[in-house]
Length: 80
Image 1 (tube, rainbow, N blue to C red):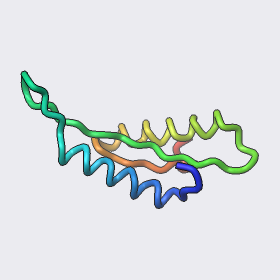
Image 2 (image 1 turned 30 degrees about the vertical axis):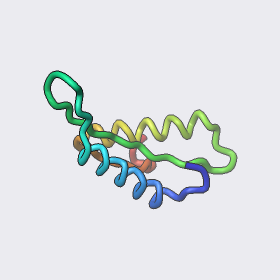
Image 3 (image 1 turned 45 degrees about the vertical axis):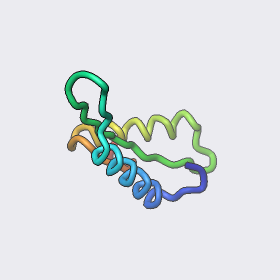
Image 4 (image 1 turned 90 degrees about the vertical axis):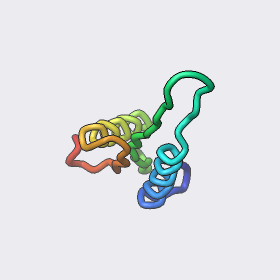
């Protein structure tokens, strides 16, 4: 999400999470399927290698996975 600060990005991800959990996919046959999402947020800083931004997003995602299902995590230096 270009030109988006972490707080706004978190709000977008939380709204997406709410949509996922409120409207589970309904297959034509078989059991009901439940959906949830995990989101890891990191942002680009001038001079930072884009691969490093992806690494930070992955670290945030792992943090979200460790805490609970359906979580949004914003990268912070203590995740390293």
